[in-house]
Figure (cartoon, rainbow, N blue to C red):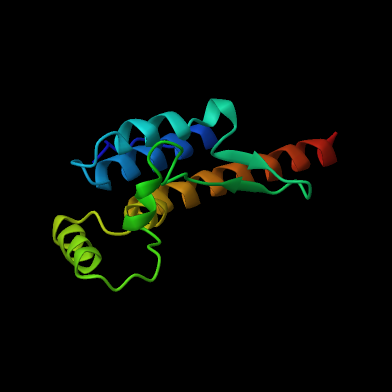
Amino acid sequence: MPKIEKIKTLENIAVRIRELAIDNAPKKTGNLIDKIRRANTPAKEKMIKQLKDFSIELSLDYAPDGASYGVWFNDPPNVVSKRRKKLKKTAELRGNWNYAEKAMDDKVLNKEFESYLEEIGDYIIGEIETEIDN
């Protein structure tokens, strides 16, 4: 698991989510980890998007082009074959099942994110107070 340091930017948050996904993703699946790394780069605005209402969306592509089988570990089609049931059981035992959800819901990361939002709020309040005082 990546070392947790104080979050300074949204890009740091996005990178941390990507690294958590990579840490939790299945290792013996060919190129999935490399594809996750390449598809989830905040600098290319793939993970961080500003929406029309000025809100911000953080996303994670857990089944990128060239490794679409990543969907089987997070949002599998409703297939009841013995092979797919075995895949799920193995992935659960190895801790790979729902790796994208684990990355997005990481408790330590979410706590750091809340702290980051509080710092932003404090900064904005300070700026407003400065403007009012002037």
